[in-house]
Length: 510
Image 1 (cartoon, rainbow, N blue to C red):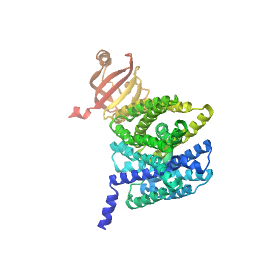
Image 2 (image 1 turned 45 degrees about the vertical axis):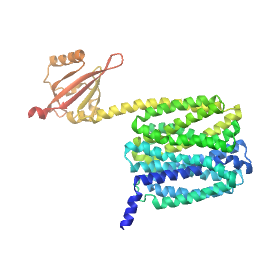
Image 3 (image 1 turned 180 degrees about the vertical axis):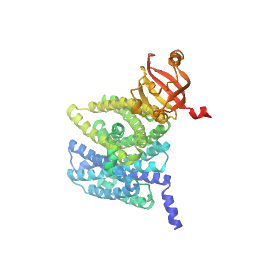
Image 4 (image 1 turned 90 degrees about the horizontal axis):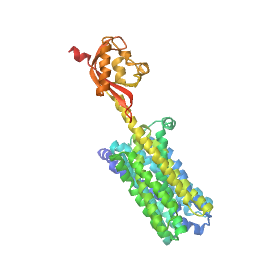
């Protein structure tokens, strides 16, 4: 029994689960991009039109995106161990099926189910934050996101293996990898992971009206979508447009993937240390610049600069977005992680089709790259809005949580807002106070001269501070220490007055 207890405790160690889930994501992503990595070899045996090749390349992203929502939810409900294990066992079928494929339909069917490899992303971003404090969530999810390097391993390695044993044999090697990791997950996955039992409908109802969710979806649609799109599109694009051989194109794509992936923890770490919205501002400006550069159809040197700029910015952006998810949606992490990551995956589905369609109509890809730039600029504006909205919300929470009573009036001295401490001290609710004047609290103990001197001091000194006797809603008199200050706009006009007070009745009696 001691041995078993020690084994369970060992499995619950955060470092073990981080390593196991990150390496499992590597395998999931390795499988996810099998078709795109081997497309130049597959088309030798299975003739495809350019449109069919684009569909087959993009099709794994469909299920890999949409399945992230239920997989994120069920990872929260049943734990990462069960969901990773089931996902890998299911993946055995499409991998074997693709290794014997001989038609376009076979590639579509196998590629669709292959998308589960990409859907496994939402497992770790839901599970791993349970093992670490909030101030480390950005970095931890960034480290987990390094699992994206699996796409680079396949993109680089699969063509080399295919040169030796053929593309069918290269695909079958992944059956062994899936079986090995299924065993590791079964043995070392945490059986006692904390689980959430809320229904999917209940969680969706709790978040779908929240605009922050959809803003985060847009951000990940741009950052991860660009990552997936370039990963899927670059191998064939470099061969067709720059005349590179498949191995050279694979190496260049692998470099792009490695840079974007390794910068995810950097983005998460930066979001832990600094304001995540500021980081995203720089990210989207960088993506916008890169899109403009690529839209001018540069030679291979400048195209490389633009592609590397995309890798750097979206890598940092991917790590930053998943710092924000647990901050805003800690109670619905599973479903929100699924929705956000699904939108990111869909962001990678449409660009390859769009790039192909634009190229067929115009002969180049400028419009598609410019659209990426425009989406990034829209996101930049939204981030600025969220940054200032966040500051306003924080200021509001400070007022709400203050121990002192706070009353805000407009420049005509009509009450606009009060905090919970005001309600507690005076007995008046916010609804009862709103629209009234401070005379609501008047005790009748102070004459006109008292109030005249008070307002003269506010006009001359910029504030008034002193003791005043007021009356609660129940008629009880109380003594308060009050400070009144005017709030001016940028041109010096008084827009509000803020009164901050403490009940000092008991102190006066003692």
